Image (cartoon, rainbow, N blue to C red):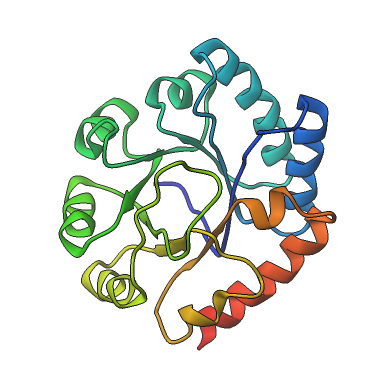
Length: 211
C-alpha cells in the first residue's frame, strides 16, 4: 500500500464551474495544503471522467499528493490514479482489491460500526464516515452521529475521516474523537479564497488530531 495522509481530504465538485476554473480551484486547494484529493464526478461518461482525471492528476503529482477516484475502479485503474473510493452501492472492496492489487489505496464510505468492520476486513485502507452535517453535494444525505463516528474510530485500526457539511465553523463537534482527518468539499471548492480556506482547515484538522 502506498503512503498517504488524510488530514485534509479534499473532495472536488465541478458543479457550476468551467474546466479551467475547476482546475484552478483544485490547484489552489493543493497550494493550501490538501493532503489527498478525491475526484468525484457523478454525471460524466467514462471517457470524460478519464480526461478530467488526467488533468487533475497532473496537478496532484506536482504537489506529491495522491489522487483518489470516486466510485469508478475502471477509471482509477485506466488513468493510473493512486486510489479509489467506494460507497456502499459500489463494487465490493475485496473484489476491487483483487483487480487493483495491494499498492492501490482503497477507501470506503461507512455509516455504521458493522459496515466499518466489514470494509476493514475486506481490505479498505481508510474510511470516510458521515454525513456529520447535511450537505449540498448529494441529494440524499443520511446523517451519522458523532457517537457512531467515535465508535467506528474505536472499532477499526485504519484511518477514519469525518465527512459531511464540515467547515471551519462547525468542526468543534469532532473534538475528542480519534479521527485521522476531515473530508471537505464545498468549504474549499466554493470559497472565495480556496487556498486560504484550505490552509485554515488544515490547521484545524491538525489541532483536532492532537486533542
